[in-house]
Image (cartoon, rainbow, N blue to C red; front, side, top):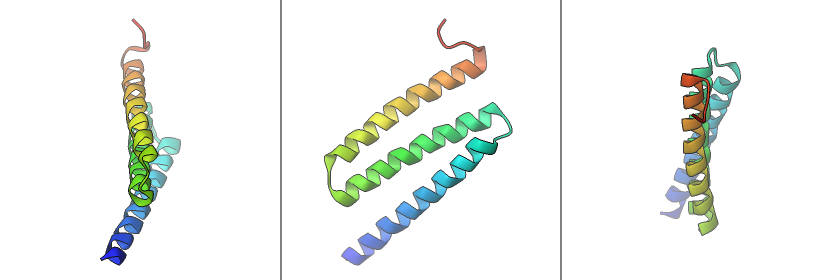
Length: 92
């Protein structure tokens, strides 16, 4: 049973890293700013998932706290970037 769990975690790591690679490519060559913001949003979600997977693998709570911080900062930064793209300013 543990080998199945180990294989599943390894497969999840590979999928997350592949998604991060695709998001990085879209972030670098995105044709519009909206595509780049969406790629950055997906990239922080993948980073959060990677931290969660490391927390599951190593059994440490610090990774779960790091994932929570990544989620909070990523959400706030996405809102700020989209507000900037819509209005041209962040603070009213």
